[in-house]
Length: 219
Ligand SMILES: [Zn+2]
Image 1 (tube, rainbow, N blue to C red):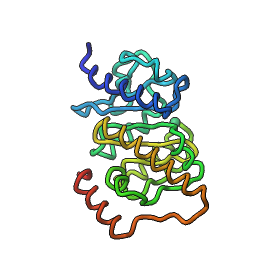
Image 2: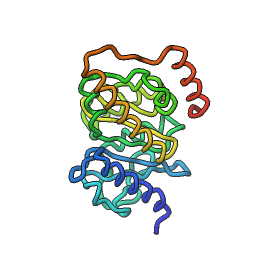
Image 3: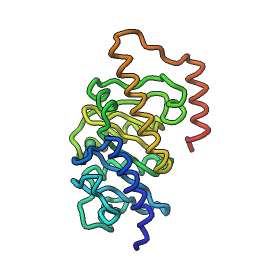
């Protein structure tokens, strides 16, 4: 048992749940998950190219804040730089989930940010789920595009022609945000498909729930 085992176990529980929802693929491995260590000097992150339902605690990698491998026999995710970029710029975030979940991915190819539709989304994720512009997976450009959007303090984003990025102060919140994001993306997609006008929340309600979010989640 290593000192990182509790965090590695949390990663495995999260990846199994996300894979069961179909957010990561069952035989394939589309996405990556990480968790910041309590003492903040390293992160636990999923390895590259290992199907998530087969993943075990010993497969999870631990990397330092520069991305150097500290623990693990597999290659850390090619998106490690993206995860580290989030942790460097968002002290409120301790868990990062990147998935290829279906409806968030649909909006990512429609290149459609999600406006203020439901109070719960504003409180938990933020006012607008923005699009992070496309760049190659694992590239420094993608890290830069992600970091450029983090200033809005949101806990959910769509990555153009790619998938979803969900954040949380802990893994449970990040998982909940991934699920909320998929739900709102599904509803928004079906509403868009009717071709009818879409009702956004009134301005007063948006401000009210944005204030609530500020009090609850923004340091
Ligand atoms: Zn991906």
